Each structure stands twice: as structure tokens, then as C-alpha cells.
Length: 287
Image 1 (spheres, rainbow, N blue to C red):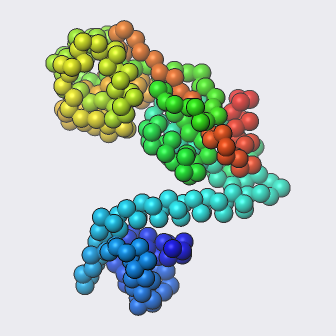
Image 2 (tube, rainbow, N blue to C red; image 1 turned 90 degrees about the vertical axis):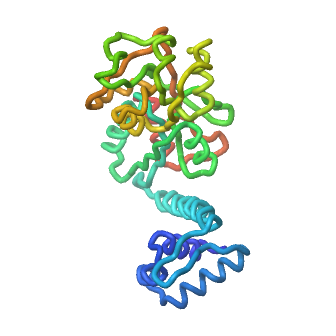
Image 3 (cartoon, helix red, strand yellow; image 1 turned 135 degrees about the horizontal axis):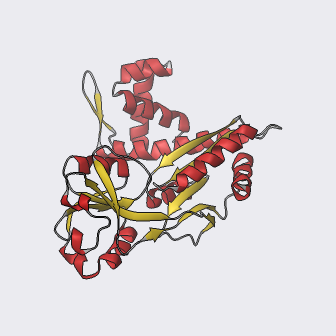
């Protein structure tokens, strides 16, 4: 299975049309069709449902699309790493980040770093800690900004100074909006939106105590922006960090008793950082 053929497959999956993909790839349509058929024969599965005007990925095709994208991304990242080994520091630094106020620290560090090394660019992958760790382990990211609780046993890390404060996002017309802080009892009868991470849910269960089993969990989420939209539409009240972000029609209330969560910047112990990533790591330590 060649990277070249995987790139062909991804182009066809993206365009949903072999003729259009062939034109973009500067191939003839028969040549591209033959490459795809050989890929299916090699894998022993059907990757597409074909019709006269468009194609649709099968379940096996959707799985290959994900794996192929990961392989192509890793190959491209490797090429960029070797091309950056010039006298002048250049290249791309890939960082995964959860939603945390420490992103402001990271952003400020990026600004001052690029003032010194303008040919270095950054690629930010936003997701929860579990998804960031998965991409770190696959070598697709250089570093990850992870909110606790998280197992950092196999990573080198530095701890961020600022902690994130837990609370709830409520609509301004909610009875809860009149409070200064919310207790577990205040949230018992309210539909709630909570993090999809099991480790975070266990932390919240400890805070709720006996109330946990009586909660109404309306939905889980991994991005606060989407949760804020659901709160605004009346799905429920979102348990989340205070990210110092203003959402129209919503109010943030802290939890009582208070909960704070730490954040760590991690990278793989057994993975040599690129010159750009190593320089950025040293820069962060000195900020």
C-alpha cells in the first residue's frame, strides 16, 4: 500500500467523484479507477459504492479514510521536519490543546517565539485530553496542552501556573442566573450538559456526592462553544471551565464548593523533538 495511492484514495473520497478527482490529480479517469480497484484487491474489501455520477464510502472505506489521512499527515510532517534542518530555524510545530485559560499563555508564547523565528509556523489541534494523547502517541503532534485529570506517566511535561475554575453556563433567564454560585443541590432538577471524558465525570461525581445518581444528564460534549449553543437553545445547563469568554445571553456561575483543575504541557519521552519544537520548548521554560 503506497502513500501515492492513499493520496489518490483521499482525493476521490473528498470529491465523491472519480472524474473530478482524476482531473485534480492530473490522471486519466481509467488510470485512477484501476489504482482504486487494485487498492480494494490488496485490502480485500469494497471501499466505495459506485454510481454513474458519484461515489459513497462503505464502512471499510470510512475506516481507511481515517487511517490514510493519519498516514499521509505523518509522512508530510516528517518531510517538513527534515526540510526545516537549515541554518535558520523554520518548520511547523503541531500542538494539541484542550479548552483551558492556559491557551492564552501558549498564544502569547507563540507571539514572542515567532518574533524571533518568523519562519516557524504552528498548527493547533483542538480536542479533549484523550484525543490529544492519541495523536501524540501516533506522532502527529509535537506537544499537547492537557487538562487534568490525565495520566502523564509516559510523557515529559511541565505544569502550567494558572488553574481553571469549574462552573456552569446558564441562560440569563434561568432561575439559576440570580445566584452567585451553584451547589450540587441547585443542579439536581436541571438538565445538564457534561464532559464526555470518563475521568472528568468521576471528578464531578465526587463533587456532587449523593446528588450524582439523581442528576438529569441531557447530553455530553467536548467543546464549550458547542455546549454554549445548546445552553442558548434550551437543551440544558453546561458544566465547564471559566474560559473568560463572553457568550451572548448566557452567564457563568462558579461551583460552590469551588473546584479547580490544573493543566500540563506534555511531549513524548522517547520522541526526539524537531529543532523548532525543541527551541519552542526552551522558549516556554524561559517565558
